[in-house]
Length: 227
Ligand code: ADP
Ligand code: ADP
Image (cartoon, rainbow, N blue to C red):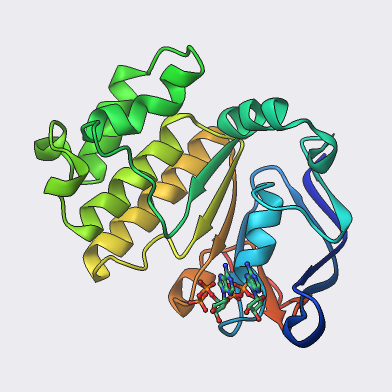
């Protein structure tokens, strides 16, 4: 079954002089377990598309179905529970809670959902992310790259069905980027997750099952790499 169906999605920002057609009738679907990479020039609509798939914004027209659910038909409370249970967000704004330490930030989405953290898995994540020695640190005591890795840990800790990542390695050096990509591959393979990732890093496209190219609000398929 298709985990994600994007149907005739359009997004227009502004009116008159400031009107921008950021997405123009975009349709595609993604199966469970697929790794999709989204590429395209700056300002072409990539972030807009990812925001809509995660229902962080509403489209001008069109629909998104996630796991069979019409996400824009859901009420806000239902949607926030759905997001927390099913979607792992790795966005450029890390949105870490400043008063909580690294480990607490990572397990927070589980606690909010009254789910018991898988302690072994959390420790494994901390280890792979190189954060074991930082688990009691607060976000302001970390570098930008470490904060980014905490955000990645938080997105994976819930074992979500779908992971939406916007330049997840943007703030990381080559070694950390490679570790993070390997971690994401491990996660998607182990838990049969769907990963949709915006990246400017050409070498990540070769890990993907399919590459979507966004140019001026239009999405075309570039044909797959191989995992
Ligand atoms: P990048 O181009 O590196 O992917 P962004 O996705 O943040 O960066 O932004 C792309 C473009 O969208 C930029 O030209 C930016 O000015 C514009 N943009 C992003 N968010 C907003 C906003 N909230 N209001 C107006 N313009 C925005
Ligand atoms: P990308 O992620 O590919 O860089 P975006 O999706 O951020 O592109 O932006 C696509 C277009 O929509 C750009 O022309 C940008 O200026 C515009 N845009 C993005 N977000 C907003 C916003 N919140 N308000 C107005 N225009 C926006």
